[in-house]
Length: 195
Image 1 (cartoon, rainbow, N blue to C red):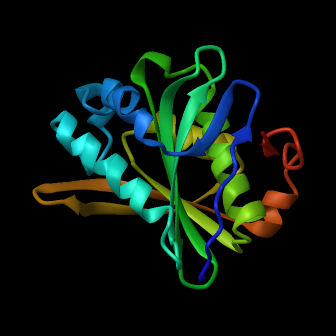
Image 2 (cartoon, rainbow, N blue to C red; image 1 turned 45 degrees about the horizontal axis):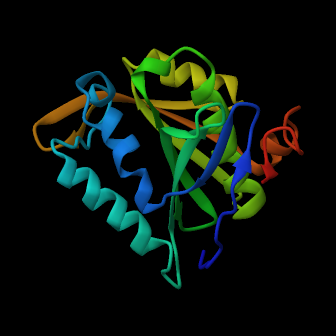
């Protein structure tokens, strides 16, 4: 799928989900460098310069003519601080991979679910995908609970998958079709409003 779509800000009850900007560096570093945030990730940043390089890559990708990756920041409306991040990566056949992360101090408050729903909106309503998938370390029950809450269905469990050099874990895969998405109660307006 070739596209040059730019993602406008999306508003959910507590969040504004938007494209990454260079000013997000400090907020990203405040949680991306924490060990509790990194425990369920294959790619782990160890310094502010690595987070800065991540932001620079996000900004470069925003202007690519055949853009395949959409990396988004999630601001908490109440504070206007970035508390999370997410991505939609396009693959062949109008399929996308989704992923998200949230500041550990805010786990368990429903913000990850709002962010994940916004990513579904981007995938199905903005980018016109036919299906999406996401994955999680099988020990990360909170992430799989978010997938369940947003209407994704468990697809498969891959045992002892190599996810990074020297790191093999059990990985749970989840999926959703466009048809399933548009059957959900929260689709139009409630979680996919342009700001």
